[in-house]
Amino acid sequence: MQRRSFLKLGVLGACALAAGGAAYRLVRGPAPPGRFVLDGAARAALAAIVPAMLGSALPRETPARAAALDGAIAGVDTAIRGLPLAAQQEVQDLFGLLALAPARRFVAGVKDGWREADPAQVAAFLQSWRTHRLATLQTAYLALHDLILGAWYADAAHWAAIGYPGPLPELSA
Image 1 (cartoon, rainbow, N blue to C red):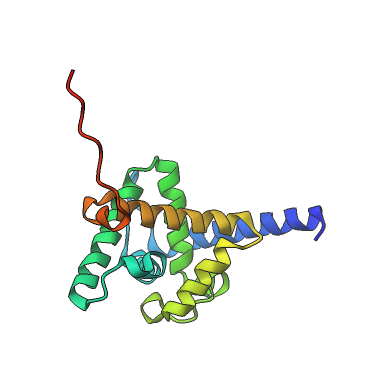
Image 2: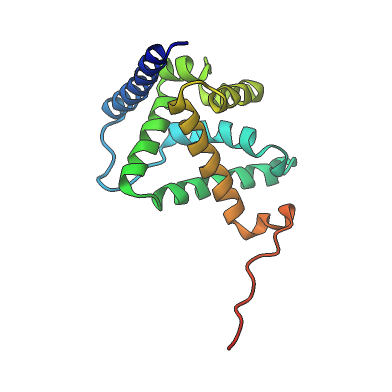
């Protein structure tokens, strides 16, 4: 691929993401100023994406798995609200793109809604974004990855699974 074609493709991808986010805002209406809103569509996308990202870190038993999934989604919401407002808007646009049916089908390959998405299909979409030649999609993957894993391991209840003993106690003078 020639450099010029690569740049054109990158600009086209960025425009597609921006257009998807703008269309989502038009359909859903504006978010309250200065606040990220994790709405039902974004929660549904996260409910499909979190298990694919966390894999075996999630409990297998149904009640514990559901509680862990809810906790992970709440943690992602908290993490996003801690970001600068411009970054919150970018994440809102990303979820808007994932929620909008035509964009979801085109950029993620998920034909039905997120609630009906097959876990293998979600894992394949994430892998394709992770290794995509467009930096925009790689960045979107990394944002989802960092938000989900960061929120998961920010919870002290998950530290033992990775052998992290917790912060060192403060030394007294």
